[in-house]
Image 1 (cartoon, rainbow, N blue to C red):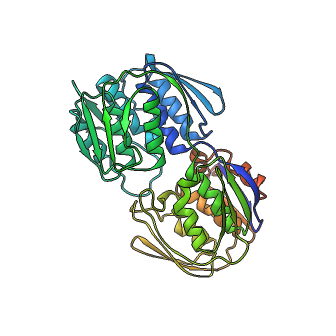
Image 2 (image 1 turned 135 degrees about the vertical axis):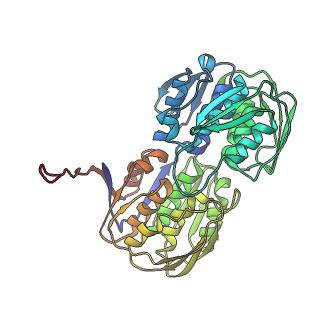
Length: 427
C-alpha cells in the first residue's frame, strides 16, 4: 500500500500547466476504433485509467503504441468485436464506450458492466435506450452487456443530458444509415471534443455543445492526428488548492471559458481572479466569504469539483451549503473530512457546512477519485500531518499530482506503508 503524506499550512504560489482532459481521453481512445486508418492522439494524461483503456484496445486486437508519454498511436484495422470482459474494463466507468464504437463498426459488441468510482446509482439505461432506437437488440447477462444489430438506422433519441449516453449514441450513429438527432444532449466540453475528433476523421456531426446534436451517418472515415483538450477538473482542482492555502497560483494551458461556473463562484467569495487567453490566476489574499453552491450539468457547477469545493468551504468562516443534484451518493468522503475537524451536517442531498474551524491532520482514506482529492486539499490547509490511504484513486485521474503540488510549494510525499502480518500461531 501507499500513502500520501501532506504537511499543511504551506502557501501555494507559482504557475502550473494542466494535462489533457481525462474524460475526453477516455472517450476519444475508444472512438479511434471507428477510424478507417491509424490515429495519433496527443496530450493524453499519464493516468491509470488511460493505461487501462490501452489494455482494453490491445485485447480487442487494435495496435496501440506510445510515441512518447502523452502521445498514443492507435491502429484499429485488426480490432475485433470479442467480449470485453477484462479486468481493465471492470476498473473504469468509461469502458462502456467500447459498446458504441464496436456496435457502430461491426454491428455487435459485448462489454462487462462498467466499474470506476462508486458514489451512487449510475445506470446505463439511457445508453441502451439510444442503441435500441438505432435498431440494436441489447441484453445483459451475467454482468456483460451484449448489443447486436443487422442494420443501424438513424433515429430521434431523447436523453436526460447524460454525458456517457450522448457520446455512446454518437459513436454508434456515425455508422447508422440516415440522420440521428440527439435531443437534450449533454453539452460538456469533452462531449464537444469527441464530436470534434469524429468530425476530424470524417464524420458529419453538428450541434455538439448545444442540447441538440445532428449526426449524418455512413460517412467514410479516415485516420489522423488529434490533440485532447485541457482538463477542466484538474484546472479547477489547482484553482481551489490555491484558494484554500491563501495562495497565488496561475493555472495555464487551459480554456478559461470552461471554468466560468467556478471562477464566478470564487469571485463571489471574494477571491481574486485574473483571466488570460489560456490561463487563470487565483489570488486569495484575505478572508474568503461563505457560499451556497448547487451542482448542475454543464455549464453549471460541475459535480466533479463538488468535493474539492466542499473542502474549501469547510475552512471559511460562516455557514455554507453544497447541494448535489447529479449523483445520489457523492458525499461519502464527508466522514473522512470530519476526521480532519470539518463540521458538516448532511440533510438529504445538501451538505450544511459550519466553516472556519481550524483543520488538523489525521489519517484518512479516499473513497473515490474526487473525494480523495478533497482530502488532499483539506490536508493542505490543516495543521500538522495528513496521511491519505487509497492513493490509487488519485492515480486514476491526475497526472503527476503530487509533483505539481510540490512545484507550487506544497509539502507532499508518497511512501510505502507496512503491511500487517498476523504472527504465527495466532490463528
